[in-house]
Structure formats: C-alpha cells, structure tokens
Image (spheres, rainbow, N blue to C red):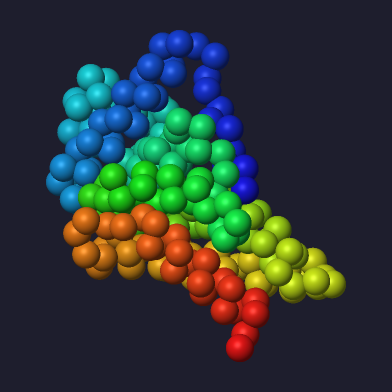
Length: 190
C-alpha cells in the first residue's frame, strides 16, 4: 500500500509551522496520554498562535488526525506489507506505533478516535483490496471491497487492542506475525 505522499506546502514557513504543530501534538498528547489538551496548549508548545492552528487545521482534532498521518508516513514508510514473504516494512511500521504508543493510544481512544480510525482505514484499505485479490482468485470488485473492509477493520482493531492492552514492552515482530497468521488462516482454512 502506498501511503499518500506528504503533500508539503511550497512555502517553507508553512511547512515549518505545520511540522512544529505536528511535533507539538505528538509530544504533548504523548506526554499526557490523552487528547484532552487545549488548542492554546498545543499552539504554545509549537510556538504558534491559536489563530495559526485554526487556519491550518480548523480544530484540535483535525490537527491530531493530520499529526497521526504524518507520524505514520514520515521517514519514507511508503508500504505496509501484510504479506508473509515481506514483513519487514510492516514490522518497521509496527515499531513506529510501539515507539509512540502513548500518542497513538490517546488518539485511538480519545475525542478524535473515529476520525483517526477512519483515516488509518483509508490508508490501509487499498492494500487490503490488493491482498484480497491475491488471496482469493476470481472475485469481483464488490467482494474484494467487502473482504478489504473486513481485513482493514480487523487490522485496526488488533492494532488498537495491541497498543492499549499489550504488555510492556510491545513486540512489533510478534504483532505482525499474529496478523499474518490470521490472514493465512482466513484465506487457507484447515
């Protein structure tokens, strides 16, 4: 699955402001372990004004959703592979989630949980459609989409449960291995 390219504004000042807001959001929410932080606090942590935050994102939750996507997509995480033959990028992405557990736990359970879940699902779904087509030959577009929704929803639920309830420290390799086992069991029942 190709994550959307981080569409960077042309103006360097805008890029710096957005990056500062993303960094502040991840840091403040991660430190607090909750999305219940004020716009003023986020703006001050980014050395920006509330007005600038509102101009760029409209509200706090939209900033948190955008920061989530940015955190997932940074450092060229361009593929989420759920294929047992190539799990390395999936493990690297799972490690990114584990390393930022407090932030992800907060956004997956806080005020913006639905928007974050839906956005992450949109990132994962194209891969799930391709995976459904690989695993189940000769299926029509509608069935491929239904299977993709099933895989995507299950993956996001498993991710949320792992982040919220998993033992410390989180083990990205075993998490990815469990996802692969589930997909194999579904596509090749005993």
